[in-house]
Image (cartoon, rainbow, N blue to C red; front, top):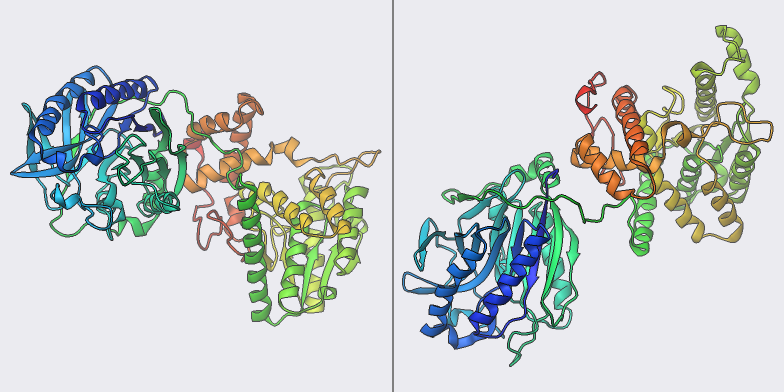
Length: 633
């Protein structure tokens, strides 16, 4: 469903050289994974015999039992939809190979030999096995079953799922086979491994898998031998890892003494979109003469219910440590970008409109950090608060408090009289609180900031964020315009965390002000406030929660997800928080506004890109202003 495939990494109990016992364990775990609707289950390297058989690999009794048993396991899969990949030693043309055997629907669909056999320190694989690196375009017989054999096999299982196999040390090589497989179209790599445990080795192993899955823009399913291998000299931990494009989506606890299966749902559609949107991937060609055979597998299990955790706030790391690290980096990028702009223009002052809301607060904090970098005083930051018809006491007081704490050049200009004069000039009734009423105020504020900047030799700092840019939640040539927009690629959900991070690293006076700003409802305050001084115009009551809009934005722009898929993911991510009807309502608003407001994005000011998503028309997002949204509705 929607390109998701449930993968499984199985680590069975084994008895070294006891093929019958190991076969029974493998069959049991295949059945378990099939019941859990896994599309594919991967077992460790040489799982049918055990990896640590040593010179027993040269015993005919052991090898004959392997040849007898593989067809028996294949028969068990006859009425199952799951693909099973097991490890076994197999003979071919007078040599012995360390192999992965692909079983599906009662057949042996293919056999892939290991390319790189380690022969250093604790490893002596060349003593028993020949490298399969150059084995291509061959066929193998296993007790009457014929199967494609070689390192040129890619298995095609339907839309967005083409897998290939490498074995343990292959991943550690200079150019892993998975790199070539991926360039040839495989988007999921399976690794049957027997990686012993050493201090810190698991960390390096995990990083290798993450890096290779990211480099290949692929899913990576890794299953390693468990604690029941021989411990004569080595101990195996049974590490199972499932990664997707540089992120680990599932991992087990090592050193388990019972059978275990680790499940992870890989998003093949997302991988496809990422690959086609990154030109460097499509430019990565396989060497001339290196050809691959495609093996088709039909009728695999489909994901009915998604178990994968979907983050409701994809722009915000769930780990506090990572979140704090990201906040520091984002803040540094913003201030470094602004510092460069000041150095280039030679301007001495910053001009920023302060409303007491989230966006202008972050912009002012970035200005203060920038001036610190440049060795300038905050008194050269002209912070202008411009109360209007909807300005509440709460936001006004917070704006003034923030500017005074930061020791900026605070200026106050009440815009009500100027706006009333403007209403009169254009013949607008000020009692009519429509879009003209609102936009007159927004443009008046921008005009004042621009004129002050001209007068003082300053740079107008834009405050609008990525979420507002996506929705067009700004006045064209009003707050839409500035001279440098420091928040342009920071979404609303992340801005709260950035300000909170600054607050946590500030003295009590500044922290208290910032925390109250964080807790203030989001509003442009362009409509008159209530008699009780309450904010009447609450943005999220009008267009829906920003966390939903940011979720939709992330999956639309970063992964090209369809509205149906986004709706499906949102219902999983926000289960218990938002009703399906609310998700549907807000998604329709997002799609309508995202398309209709492109004309504003086509002419936005410069600003620093801080994350993987930006809507700059000069770089990340090039969309016609008159595109129809009919396909998305």
